[in-house]
Image 1 (cartoon, rainbow over the protein chains, first blue to last red):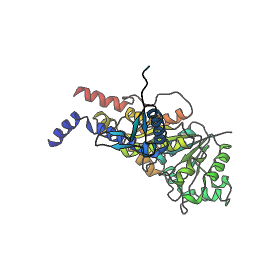
Image 2 (tube, chains in turn red, yellow):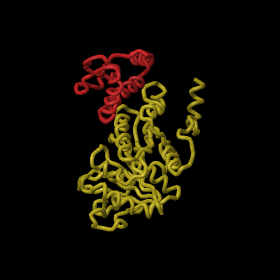
Image 3 (tube, rainbow over the protein chains, first blue to last red):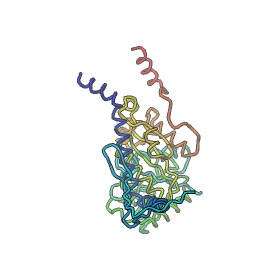
Image 4 (cartoon, helix red, strand yellow):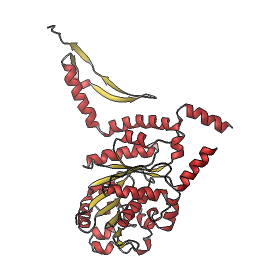
Length: 90
Length: 265
């Protein structure tokens, strides 16, 4: 009886299939980012290029990394700003 | 002849690489091809027992690369099919007994004599894996619908790409339709979505695999085996035939009968 109730509850929650998919998705984001540091470096360089047009930043101290939360993965960038560029209105 | 070298790999152990190699090789030979199965799992050889050829080993792959015997002497001819041979792994050496360079030379030799060279890769991503993929034109990745297996398959797909094998195709092994239906097992589409590689085939969980392995007779030789049927279809796809990946649900008599009973309830 308990088994049946547990099954019904499980099905409502999407079954263990959905849990597996979600966990797999998260772990692969992490695996792929750590197994190809080149990708992260390329992203870092592109970020610097874009931001340089607007801000003066400390390129040496710039940090870009993936962080795992319980149910998501976030791209965290820590970019020390030294100053703003004067924006010329056209 | 200019044969094709196909490596069968997975990363994770126990997902069915050796069973897949034995069955695909036998199926390809049944269809008239010259096939050689190469076991590269040095130290942990098993393709010989799955094929039922363990009593006939004289020389092995390490003897060949070290020049202790001719390539032809180490090949074991399968008595069931003319065009089917096995090159066994060594059992008393370790993975470093051969190099990727030697492996490449050997597969190039085999190309001259066979249509298909199926290379059974050991588990892991170390030396044995590097040897196994060294001479390959194509790769088949085997995965079961479990997180650990799919995760390892993802890593393998990445490593194959780095090695220039970006055309890897996937076999999903041991899928259980009822568990998928109940939402308790990842489905074909889920896995394809995640790995984003082409699907070569799907093999159902089937007890006949255990029985055929016990006997040393690949399941493709048996007409009633569902897994055997799936492997025969995959073999035809490898040969370039354009047939559907997944068989229809109620294809055989028994399945249809079960369906009718279910409907009547």
